[in-house]
Image (cartoon, rainbow, N blue to C red; front, side, top):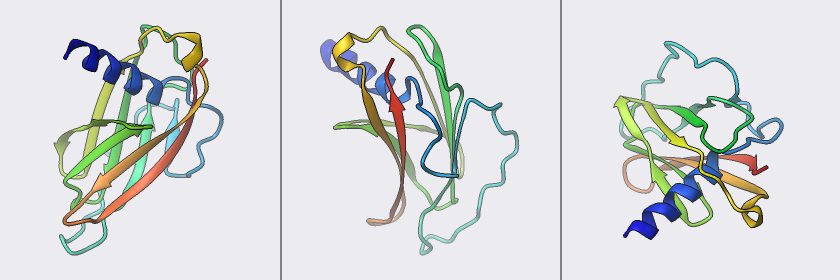
Length: 139
C-alpha cells in the first residue's frame, strides 16, 4: 500500500512538474497569479460538460515545491481528474464548477525526466466528459 501511494505521488508530481513552453490550449494558464472570482458557466444536467480554464501555479518547478492547480468547469461537472499515463488523481470540489488540488514535487530519478501529457478530464452525467492535454517537461 505504501509503495502504491509513493508511485501515485511520483506520477502526480510528474504531471505537474516543469510545464513546458506554451500550453496547447488557450484555456490553460501556467505561472500567472491565481484568478480570483472567475465566472463559472451554468449548465443543465443534459448539457455537455466543458472545461472553461485550467490554472497551474508556476511554470518552473523543482523538488520540494508545492504546485497548486485549479480547474473551472460548467456547473454540471461531477468530478475532475488529472492523469499522467495510467495514474489519475481526483481533484477536490470546493464549489460547483471549481476543482482544486496541490502536490509537493518529489525528487525524481533521471530516467523519469522527459516530456509528458497531463490529461485533465471533467466528468458529467453518463459518459459525458471533456479533456484538455497539457504538455509538461521534467527537468
